[in-house]
Image 1 (tube, rainbow, N blue to C red):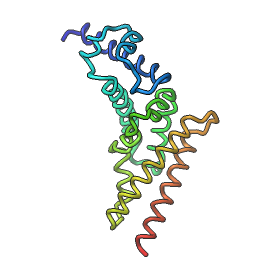
Image 2 (image 1 turned 180 degrees about the horizontal axis):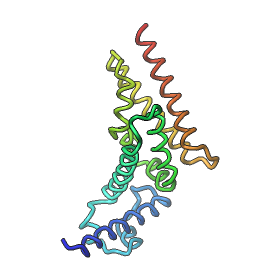
Image 3 (image 1 turned 90 degrees about the vertical axis):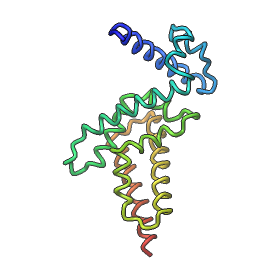
Image 4 (image 1 turned 30 degrees about the vertical axis):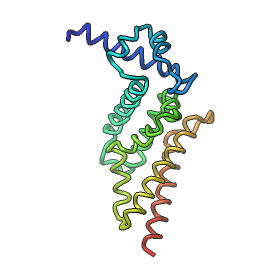
Length: 193
């Protein structure tokens, strides 16, 4: 493939991503018509199907691109920082804030509830949670606390990103971590008794 073809593919995919995000402001993904999506992107349906099998695959591509950007940002956080966990959570929230419109669409899209959980699957975040839960002896309780932490953090993230009142990423990270630590500590204490 020559460079001009590569540029066309990149442009086509970007046009499709932008068109889908615009449509998701109006309708849920299950109601997105490929015909309308292509009309908005200014491409034909054959071109769409050359790149994606459905609007769900395109949506997943957008999610993956977003997650890759978060992962890159997390790798830039210095490992020697004393407040590594807070810095990592703040870095994620800063990226969400910088890409607020897209963040709201990805987090609140009913058909892709796993997007927020996929954030916790990023090694830079999931490993921190696993380290926090490493001392749990009861595997069932460990998984319950992990799920509770993930879904609770997801909900806090959804509410934070939609708020008109500005709460900084650092403040929100501190709140999420405080609640998460309390849940872990209470569960660990209950396990030891």
